[in-house]
Image (cartoon, rainbow, N blue to C red):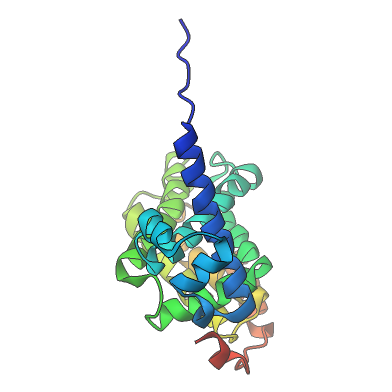
Length: 237
């Protein structure tokens, strides 16, 4: 007898619909007026819901912001699976960076001010930052573990620590992009360069020449990147 998957109840459907209305309202407010425009009262008005409903569904403004980031991650994962399946682990590690950079750049009116606010300690909070960092690092860890299983990388270092190190480099590049110090191409190149250097620490002889050549190419890209101060910096603070 086949197991029948449980269907969401009408109440669950309505709750999820309200959650999505809140997230869409947050996107609209941030894109239109930056982080300073995002208050619970404005979110309630934009979403057509009561302030009490926002608190009941998310608990706080910071939790809404974290949910907005998580929603972005959830959108990225199926793109990763389509463009770089885990069976191609080094391509997967690269795609974790390139797909997310592309997603941020395509939605910069939303994510640029969020990154700046997060860096300034004005958004989401330390717990949310830790949760996001752990999830992002785990995406790299999965690729690294598969590459070790295929003999492409050595298992001499902890995949979790390598994933965290790659994420830290990505995070710095993301903040520089947020403040306008890097364009999208620079964001991508800097984050990939950090990833390649981390992987070179455990590269097998079979892939070391490929990774070294990739690092050299990224160095040339970084040399050509226009690093500039952003006249919009205060706008995003």
